[in-house]
Length: 95
Image (tube, rainbow, N blue to C red; front, side, top):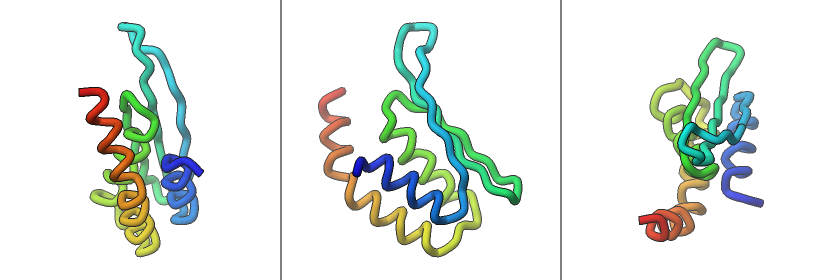
């Protein structure tokens, strides 16, 4: 299972509906747009150059801004722990 799928699964378990799409911007670069919303009207949308980065940003903003259930806090910490090493390697390749 990919790390972005783990984050998406955790969001679903915490009551969030989510979506993900890739697009090409005006400079020909692929961008990823990920959003999540709940029945209570909360909605978050993020854009990033990589799919994993988009999901991690979405998880991060939901964790900071929304009143989330404790499950998401635990899941967020676990997915960051699992993906930290891989994410660091991805960032070092691009810089």
